[in-house]
Image (cartoon, helix red, strand yellow):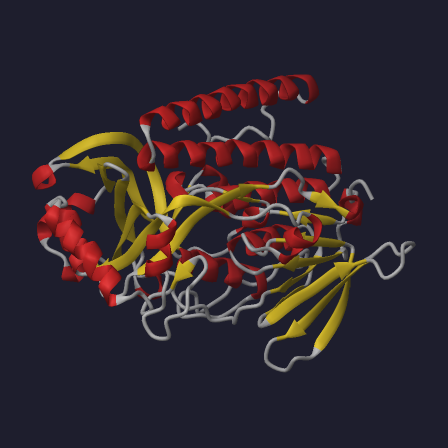
Length: 449
């Protein structure tokens, strides 16, 4: 099947593997074109707070404008990025309005829109439209395999197991979408050679409620994100919604991220669990970071010293957590004659510096919607998403190398990114002129940095 014609959308069976931000975005769009969508998610319905911020770029805002049926505000607006020097003296790095939210607030908003999930964030879900397809969200469900029982079968079969009961189920689908993150089971089946690559550094993260911070620090983060750079270190902090998505002053959180280079030896030490001593792979959750590792980070912060606002924030973090920075780019995103697609972090894992993870998921979701509605062929879809993903993968490598690596390597990475960016824009513009006389959907408004 090269594409699904628009008049065939209604009633199409779509299974999305992975029910996080990417899977929910895609599921919401396909629900609204009449597909019957099931999401299979291995985690529970109620997620423990990720204590992480999300930059809401144009791709995300456009998607929500068209598909979000909730009216409650859930973002905090900033005017740009400022770099803090000694004594909190700010220097403007970039200007431009950007909406910021938390992972939790966006997740529960998408859940509310997708399947009417009731949460403290959104206790009153929007009503379904008569033209919507059916939806189901199966939590605690781990996918074991995707395949075609018989070579002549038009549909695919997804085999899964309930993590609580161990009951094995089989579901048929016309389209299977792998939105199961950087450690994707779907990608592992079809592209086993594509693996995470350690970037050479980690990020120490945490949040502090506004009411616990001084007025000078609150003033520093009031209208912009703030950063501070050192040799092979950099820090960024910004305001995100608080408990249950609160945007009330004093209840909001300041999100803090400190990137540090780590050798394999030091990485092995800081990834050790403070309680049972086992080595985590990619994330040390809040409450599990070794006290000695965090104390060493605080000691370094005081010795530098960090700008007063940064120092106050880091000293007041109660439950830090650590994420290993890694990346990869998959050279292929469509399998089984276009009936299995990869999207989001399952397709390409970009470094977080430009804040484009949610933008990437929104772009991929729009592209899948176009394919399902018959606007593009599978070849056009794959070319579109791979070009876009590669662009932002190279951008992440460039920014990471600039902040954490040597200047010579940053120049090389920058040349690669800017050359590809110019080619990407020119090619997209030419294709738009030749096919529709307008702007191509493969041109991102977020690749100008």
